[in-house]
Image 1: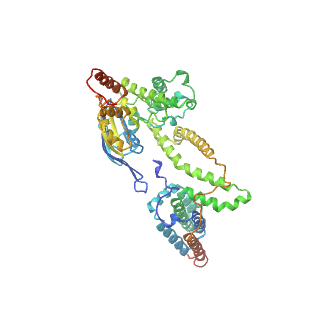
Image 2: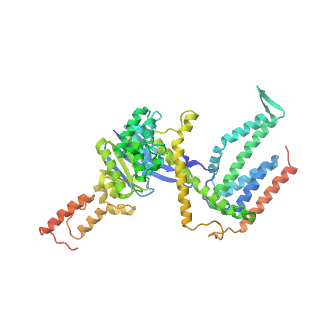
Image 3: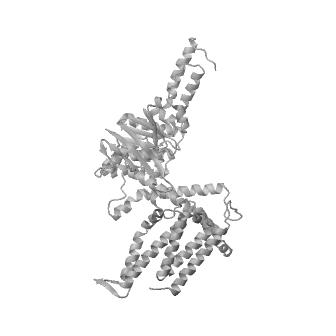
Length: 269
Length: 292
């Protein structure tokens, strides 16, 4: 039932993208997101699209798998598109009652939908090709300088990796409890909103109880293995940059420069 | 009246890298009033199989008939099926949620559309049949011990008065006394109410003592489906798939190899004892000579 959530799920495959240092992927994703929200004009749009297609193709993750993540944000996308459609001032195309659709509105709505789609596709490449552990490892190392000014980077990274680790477990648990209650005749689908919210109680109470139980167990297990925070901890697989990582950095920077150049000089229409 | 599975297949996460075929061409007939054991190694598909029996999972291909009706037909009411085929999950105590034990057991009957009084009556009956002391009825289920919680959870399913009761590893994590208590309870339900019981387990010992038919699952397929006696005859094959026959089977085979005329088909400790006594009586009478 809930097994089909893809957003933030690792897809094992043997590709260059999978092998990249997680810091490169984090940096690349950040640059990609910035580029998404500052590109203007057909040339820049083409550059972004080409870059996205190239990365998807190299990652060897089936495209179908990525599109599944889009379904989750469909409603958000529709709302954003609707707001853009009706709220943008400009040259009126159609108007009825208090609503009017402007030419600029149509353009903005389409652009926003494209941007959100690209955003999800792009970021899901990162999560599909990087295990949560690699991701937090990369984040921890990249943010390490911040620990000099008193930010507990290790603790934050540890919390993140635990949280990420527990998502699939809790999903599975939800699925199990849901089925157990359905076996006792519970109905999670029909009825009005109030009834639906009420029908969630038999699901949420056991879920919270089990989450607390798991947290207790985990804390105990960590303590039993002498976990005492980040100080002096070494890694079995420390992160080191290799040739392909440097090449990837170069490509990301070139890509960003291309988008900015297109924005500055080729910004028609 | 029966449940019939016809060529049921189930595939997890189809078309992804995580594809797993959990059931392969499963054909079964579960007749009324039987006491059946489903045995298999972890990941053999036994939990998946039983979730098909009450329609919680939908087969990727194949059909399931409940009393002759196709349960995947559009006009078939799956919720009704679930109250007739009661399923007790593994660690059922994790599904308790109400403020009192009594209310929790009422949850199932209320979902069946019974009035508050009727549901209460059912809950009372069910709690009594699992042997819960009355003074605990209005306490929080979270204050109980593990074994008690499990009995309350089982009562929650019994209160729906199912015709078929399926229990997925009902003894997991219990001590020997708790295990016997639960299994005896289930055996009593079978005897007194005449309901069909399907007991899922990976312990042959548990199952051999109670059931009349054993279904052995291996890698999603039915490997054996017969009486315990017949199934344990294949104890060497069972070993090859990571299962074991009851310990008495081994003991009896070894004793026979060493020359004691015992019945190797004894499946329970009681039968073994009897056969052993007879064989020993035979020695006294001077019929055999034994090299131990």
